[in-house]
Image 1 (cartoon, rainbow over the protein chains, first blue to last red):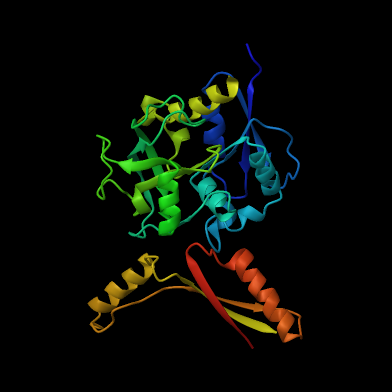
Image 2 (spheres, helix red, strand yellow):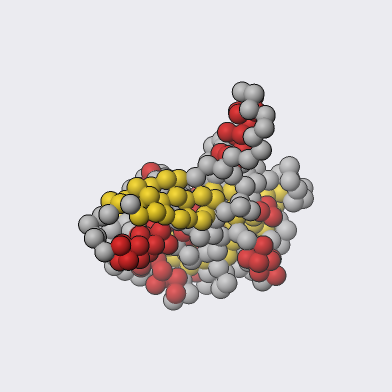
Length: 234
Length: 79
């Protein structure tokens, strides 16, 4: 068997999905996930880095605004520059946007409420490092849990994301229809997740690590995390 | 030197807090109110007697930390 895929889970003060993420990867074979404390400026080499959900630095000022100045973020940036994979979920997505590693921003849900529920998201394209095991158009059932998950970018940025195929997932109905009613948080164009230009960075608000087992409501998150592991294990 | 910094959401960014406050004002009878925008106000005090340098530093802080240019505008006064 090939050597294990090495995954680093960055832990900021206030991260609260780091254990879930490590547990989720422990459910998959062929990978080994460990924690990286945010003060670690030189964490070593990993095949993929994950920025988990939570409330880094209490979400003070703006979600992710302060975390992006943690010493570890320079390493995350360099890791990404080398074409290695980065996955940011929820607060991790917010941090990647604040750090300028992904375009746009995430801000307050239009209802002002914290939304914690299972939603459906549509896989916009297969064949990426994070969606290799999904089919294009496949609908996944993945929970969201956020108060500030409304994705915003200006029209030019949204058009660029669309034309270059950089939208990873959109909120949709159970049948895969992308409608206003199926958009839980007012995100522009129902965007739930986006890729960097190279599709080696994925930021998404829904939590794949919370959808690893049918007993937890869905096992669809496995498709995303397994895609990553199988892409790296090739 | 003290800076009073105002951070507001850009015009085309919907402001859920502002809309909620506006609805509340309407319920209270202030029906002529047609727009409320909620922003942030920061006061920064620093040791920098030179106004030109202070202005440049504050502007830098706004761009680097206080403001997300994707969604927010800012302006500030030095006092």
